Image (cartoon, rainbow, N blue to C red; front, side, top):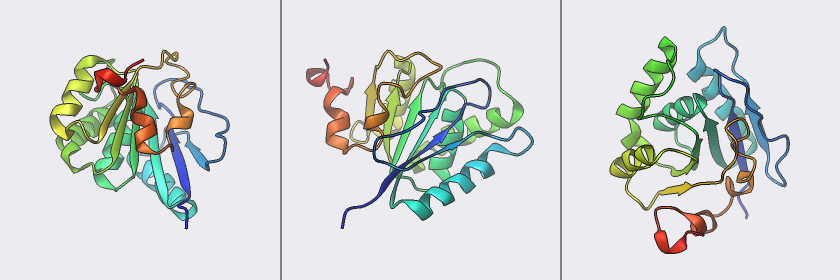
Length: 178
């Protein structure tokens, strides 16, 4: 029996980001955070909804949502974690108290993440920090050239793709780069 794969897109709570309107064959759920509620419980509830629909889930977050996605993956198992334009380790824009707390939590518990990790359009320092903690086998870094307001535009099809296909252009494997 083939497993049903899906994507949970987390919208950046600090800026407007275009989430993919449709994915070819995979179910997807886009979470736009309610500013009056805490971020992590909203993400937990959305993940629960995705788990009811799919056997295999990728959580994708960009910008500040990458922090929420990493914290979620450190707390609950997901099969793939995709982070775009995030600054979990570097210094970025000033964050709210809740996002700062989640970033500290995610960094402290990153070794608990059991998923494959796809980094899209992140700084080399971020890639190095993730590689030190997770090792190269579960980590893939891609440079897509997509604008920050549409981070998944050119790689949405890879979010549910088999891991060997995702690794075809992995920047961490120099002989596979194009």
